Image 1 (cartoon, rainbow, N blue to C red):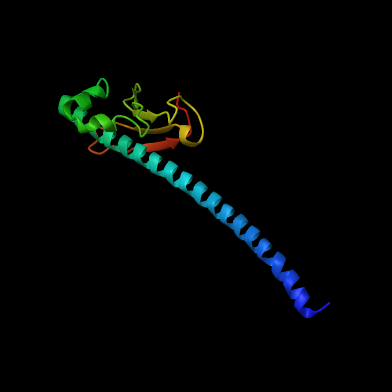
Image 2: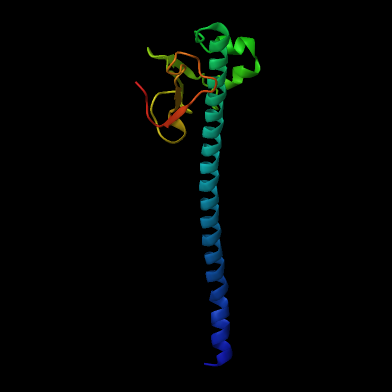
Length: 154
């Protein structure tokens, strides 16, 4: 066998291995980038929903200071300010759930992409709660929102 023959045999199978290796590497890179894009999109969606919760919380306190009581529902806020209509919904277009407990704590909840309590991933619940009065009974100027993700509130 001549050295030239060995080289030609090696040259004939080497490009196939290189092509397969490059294909496997390309598929791996595409899977990694796709997964990263999904995670970034989920984070962006949660961020927009949290932003809506914070803006609506501030508007709720503005309403309370101007009217001496919390709004009966979120529709009264968006009736006054049409730009707020989209903010009273989460990123998936579901209306934020609005609740006031007996001690005046307001809770706003997004039930995630599916609009149903509970879930994982994009279906995870996102909520923000804040007290409306200080110890002296005065309305807070700025909401002190505590955020919960993935925990369905009673």
